[in-house]
Image 1 (cartoon, rainbow, N blue to C red):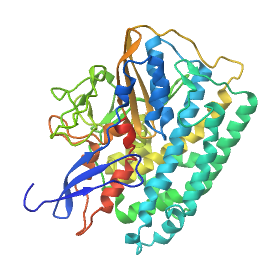
Image 2 (image 1 turned 135 degrees about the horizontal axis):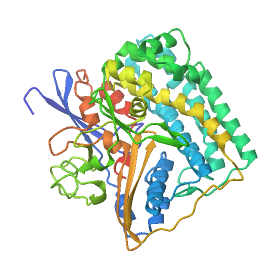
Image 3 (image 1 turned 60 degrees about the horizontal axis):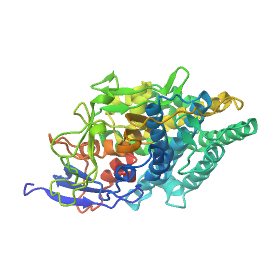
Length: 484
């Protein structure tokens, strides 16, 4: 560190799920280097070793209380592959509804409760939009926050009807779901989704979901928002005023495992997008690097099937309990924006072409996905066939290996499972925030957030720079999943 560089440690962060600390090297009023630390080790991968493989359906969801269905889904998919088992059509549709409900609820929580309240700080009191933000998003009091939480609570009735409980449901199984829905349940589901849609069209989007989904460029987005009410348009006004389209750009490499399978493919495609081009998903090219994680096994990157989770508390080189996932040796960003870019949505592609994965682009990607996902959920309900099978049955082999890949709200989630003598010999999890908040790898290449923070402005005397707060929260981190 040079004489002109100062060091600042920011953390713990509020309004972040779990523990997070960021070390910043600052020079000439901007971040020159960032080191992202997950300071709490949890070790669910070790807890799972030696157990019956089906125990993963009970234990893995408890990694997290806000994206537990996604953890259930990844575990169920790994067990299904191990058994060579395909879910029933009803099981697949019900699973899609549960995963989508959790993801949409998480998007609403992030925007209204985690992200937007930052703009109600006194530091922004002179901005023309401040009064509207303070009325809408002041912590625990803003009308937008209270409305969104009520909509979220109503939307989670879907979980009560299909999953029996949330979080930590046991309804998701390798062959489908353990609970059926009758025609009366279908009517309740449709009413729940209709109420959620009406609330979001009135207050968040101030227009039909179809209008949001049809936006095909940044110019169309800005024209659509001009003079419009609603919280989405308010965010876009803030982003334009503060230059959030120029803040927080990382590598512009995106990864998605694909989401919501149907009879004719997935709603959101699987793949990658890098150097301005789409590419295939090569799961076999995923590795985990321990070079700067406080873990044993720093000799070489590990493929997840050969991976290990042996903490090394005496390690002085590592600065986090988070490993460094890489795809073909490169860091990739994942999340709602990544899903929409990989899927080829024209607005997401245009945002990335113009400004990369900026703070604005990440938030727009999340709200675009909210509109797209909620719009199709009612169709999935109508496709349920109460009299048809809901869960296929299979036999677990005594030995084998399999992986389960799904998309949580925050991005690509994978579980890799190795079974020997009827017991879990190895279980490795790579969560979305493990990708996004990874440390440096053996080549010294920073993870996506570490790269995104470089260049962020820091005013003299700032101890928790607002630019850093906005960039961190634009990723919507879940640190308990990161260190599982």
